[in-house]
Amino acid sequence: MAFGVKRLCVEAEAQTPELNRRHDTVFVIDDDASMRESVEALIASAGWLPETFASAEEFLSRPRSSAPCCVVLDLMLPGLSGLEVQRRLAMRPDMPIIFITAHTEVLTAVEAMKRGALELLAKPFQPEALLDAIRGALGQSRAVVCRDAETRMLRTCYETLTPRECDVMALVVAGLSNKQIGVELGISEITVKTHRGQVMRKMNAKSLPELVMMAVTLGLTGVTDSRGSLVLSTNAVSNS
Image (cartoon, rainbow, N blue to C red; front, top):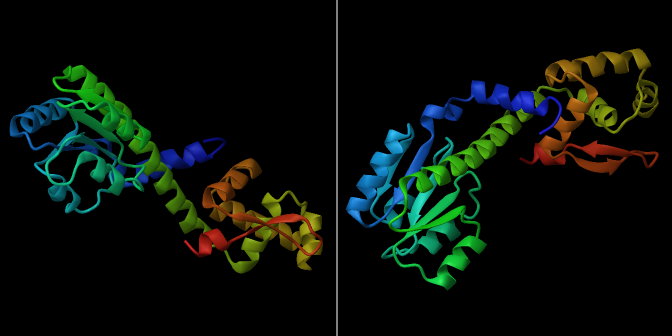
C-alpha cells in the first residue's frame, strides 16, 4: 500500500474489533484426537485462539469468521478430503491453509501446493515449524482482512458524497484542473474548489495522491468524458 492508504489500513484496524490480534484464530481439522489436542495446546501456548474439528464437515458447518485466521488441515481426512476442503475455501484468501499429513503422496502434495496451500508439513513435525507456518498464515490473513476493512471504510466515506461531489472527485483523480472541471461540469471554478474541499474532507484524504489511491482501492473504473479525456466511473462502488 502507498501514500495514506497504509494510514487508512491502520485506522481500519483500530476501528474494527475483528482485527484485534487477540482474536486471531487457528482452525485445526484432524481426525486424530491426540494430534488435535497437542496442536491445540501448542497454538494456545503461542497466544492464538485454537478451534478444533474432527471432520471437514464439522468445520464447514461453522459460521464464517471475520477475524484473521488460518487452517491447519490434515491432508488425508476420512469423508471430505483435505483437498476438497481446500477447493471449497478457494475464494477465501483470508483463510490460508497449512496441510499436515502422515501419508505423503507426492502427487497429492503437489496438487495441494498448486492450489495455493501455504505449507505442507509431514507428521511428526517440529513444533516450531508449525508455529512459523501459522505466523506466516495469520500475517497473510491479517493483510486481507485489513484490506477488506479499509475498503468498507472507504466505501462508507464515498457514499456520503453528493452526486456532484462524485463528479468532481472523478475529474480530480483523472488529473483535471479546477478550471477544466468547471468547464466540463458547467460550474464556476470557485464552486469546484468548494466541492473539491468537501470531497477531501469526506474521504479523509490528506493529499491528491492519496485520493487517487482511494479511487483505485474502491475499484473505480476508467471512462471518457465528453471530450474523450479519461475520468472515472462509480459503477464498481454502486454495484458492490
